[in-house]
Length: 486
Ligand code: SF4
Image (cartoon, rainbow, N blue to C red; front, side):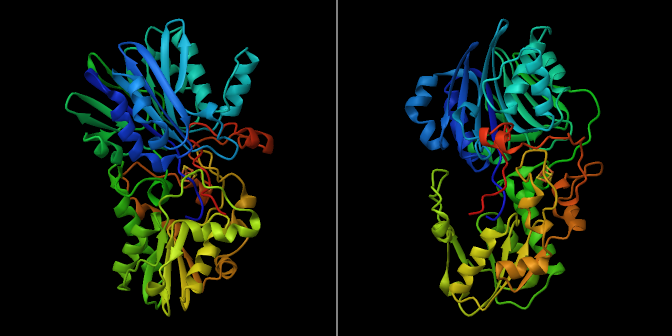
């Protein structure tokens, strides 16, 4: 609730016979809506003819039955939900990105952020490229198209193109005859594969496979390219070095709790986070309350480990979408009250342990603490399932400026005071590997907490104010932006 927005979601389907694939993508995107609520779109492949519809808005509003009917039947389709960073909400940045080239057509969807997008764009523009959007995904599309004109097949073009990319990319590329899923050599963003009765699904999260009745097959590996065509699925490698460093923040905040990413249940990871916090920061209290949604699972874990009862102390208004207009600053306090309300009977007269997933600027959490205290809570002890944010993220979130990170300026005690909480405990950095226990050889990215970036960091890689206004490079991740703080 207090810091980072969701990122993008990608979905692809390939099946043996012509059918209503737009409906399948629609239900898959519905399950991925939490990863992006700004725009969405579907491209259908009907025996080599690609039709696309994309628009700003939620999946249920944009991809209505008449829109899906107009997309028609096909044997492959891809879809995308996007959350753009500030200024990046221009519908031109919506995906799928469609490309016409002399060897055919292509549709592309992307989740991630290309760290060297600015450098690549400058280089390509100098050579005459013209870009129509502010999205880094268009750069990927351009690179693939350029390579396609020199390669025998699309998979070779994709392989050559992505070698130029640094950063995070979970991609699905649809050509007239193939569906290609690619996960970058660091596997920053999730991507998994499932099986239906007569075909395959590729999706950002396993919850989308469940939504369309597909059986989970496996996660796509770091540096792997899965090609689906008439010959069936084939696994190829992108070549080069692979060092998986999946984003730890997917488990803390981004992903849905019913998803399993790289073999680790998000719900269980959050419960473990709560249990670890209970041991690290014990406190005498009467009730454990989670900030909906991502604080709920961790609150259960804290309650079980501490033997303090779990309570529903906060209720979220589920019907506030991206169209909710923030009130003027004098009324911003109300924005939190409209989104969240305290359950007085659960917190009045009680010492509350409040579990939230992260603190970015610290403004929202202060308002939530105030909500609880006004509802009669005697004490509020804040426990946060992420360590303090101290460094910008170059792989898709807009944790992009130390000036906006409260932990860069104040100690935990000072932040507790500012928020009006009686104590504050952050998740211990050294215990992140217990939250999401990856197999040997895999070490999650945690660079926004410890500053150890898994890739080269490009100077000037962050957007300046002008670029932010234009939404440039807010790209394919759909801006896994810093969770909004009112
Ligand atoms: S820097 Fe943080 S948010 Fe960005 S990929 Fe790494 S862990 Fe995830």
